Length: 394
Length: 243
Image 1 (cartoon, one colour):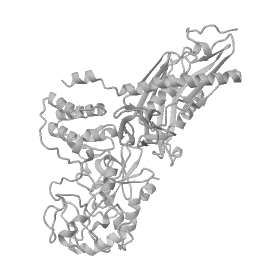
Image 2: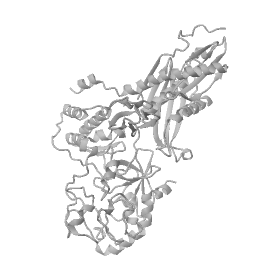
Image 3: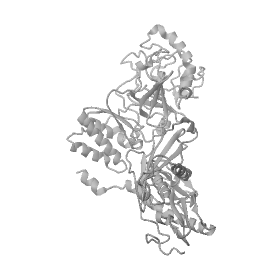
Image 4: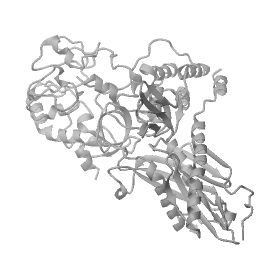
């Protein structure tokens, strides 16, 4: 007969028995020892049906794809920059992922990022050896200007962000500070010094009380007690993020456990990226291919897509057919049957767009772009597999 | 010669008064304090973090590195010189071997979890207090552990089998003494550290080990309480502060 020994929200320690019997399943933070389910770390119990899992109250940051992290440049290599991510893992930002403009091979990389610079980057992939590939291509991903850096315990991230970004938005609006919360346990903020102090206090308060309930209201009271008004209204989830096109929604949902307060990546302030679709486009029909669940973003009809600010370059060079249907879903490799280009371009992160008419290159460079892509293909593969980062670590 | 009464008046199987706390060193990733009688151990855990020197890196899992150190005036005798001694290096190694079986570091290849143990005051049983404090600190740091480790020194003073020897008993000169530090995984009774210093009959050793496993459960209860205390909601205080 199965029996549960603990309740939801109980604090448990390693070795503590959580349940007995085969009816219960061990989720993250617990394991089965014979008939019993035992905790393997300090955490809060969370019972979901038959699965018992632990919400960690402490512990290191485990990097995952699509996470947004704050990093510091520690070295410059042949292909890019080595980053310190406040974790034991080493991270690489390759030149390709750093900027939308075309970088000549051998050019001075310090012009883009210098040693000691901080940046907000997105995790592209994490290897089995926990090496991280970082990108700066995505809304809000950028080098960070002056400001203040704060360390916090990475498992408090969901609490600090709040549901749909509500908690951090509340602090941002009340103190009028820019705040970027990295999932790796670093927060960057910039605002008036007096306001920054209050924001820091609010964040520390959330950290200390993350395991209790009613934190949002108590933070609101804390801000109001400092004489600030918390504006009402819907919180805007404007955390920086990685762009992914046609990514598998389920896959993304799973990989985003604990991040972004579970909200869907939907709200856009209008089209961020003008679509330049060359090749087989059927006008509006293919819209579904680009992360079809996304509303309000890429609602562009067929025809000239010149409108709006060009934020990203699209260098869709002539390697094989352009496929914009659902085949792209499910990640980098393997889904693109019929693409005879050896999988090079589609091995890479989806959020990159490269146009034939790259704004900085102009029309005559079409062919050059194409050939450059071809030439770069092998090294691109290396970069995204992380093997070049291994080499450069020697 | 018989050992009629213990120097501090305890029962032969009675442990010294214990105290434990978690999270005592704020800047560490995890920390713990464990005191048995006058022996106090403070443990700080840093990690997982990048491991230097590189030749020590293990690409399949993280490693556990323990540094044990007694503070200069911690003991009753002469001032202990600072810096690692052969004794402290040996103790660092046995403590690491006592904790290794419960810790799971395969998610952190090429990394290290550093455990620093300092003893501000010692009265025998320092390696046991160290293991107890380190267990608390590792759990506090969020390291994946299948269970904690509890340690106590049992042994023989003259004709009696005793639990939790203090310095006076270890230095007992009127008869044979055996000091047996034991570290136990409480849920299974498995032993992760067993040393013997002195002279002891085999039958008494078995008896002592059984006592050690019993005592470990009591020690584990103190460790668990220390960890849970850290997260106790001071509900009255909270209401007051949010006014």
